[in-house]
Length: 219
Image 1 (cartoon, rainbow, N blue to C red):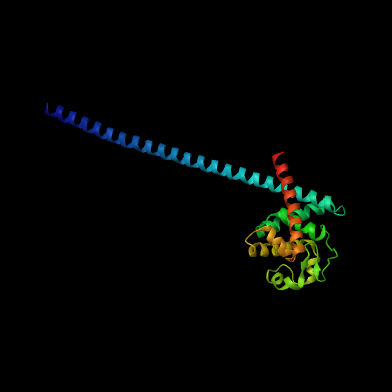
Image 2 (image 1 turned 30 degrees about the vertical axis):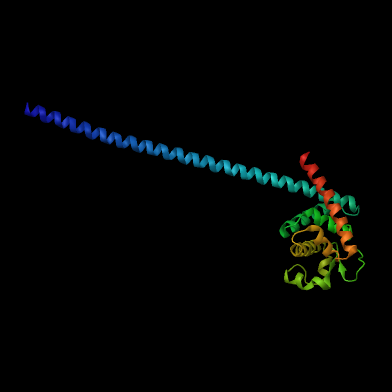
């Protein structure tokens, strides 16, 4: 009987040990399963966020493409002497430089039309004013050199350098005028009665371009 009782106790002990081991194993399995589910949930959220970011980037690219085409078409309709390839390059340069300076490429486009009708070497009323953006070299040469945009007056005969310089100068006036485009344009034009009238004309062109850009986006 004593041996039997000992055997029973041993069996009970082994059973308890096995149940404890099984309980621990089950807890580990459940913990691993929960960790996996949490990991999967986190990854699913991460994938959804990446998809959302990708969709936003695609939409942004689509909008920029629409704006670029509006600008390109406007350049072509304003100056028939420019090829579609060159107009496309001008449009991309205008968007790039305007975005870097923090103002609307449509306003920049309207300004360039007002200054030169997108001609690279127009005749300006004032001596010393150069290129597509009507840059007054003697006034801006120090700042343009400091910004590493142009080092000589002849540099501004390059249309892409001139677009860059024009975008920089407009941004300076935007800062000075608390980001009010009409006031900034009036300063660009010489801040006189004539300059204010010209600024109003530029804004009319820019607003017309904006309507076209919005129409394209909605179509």
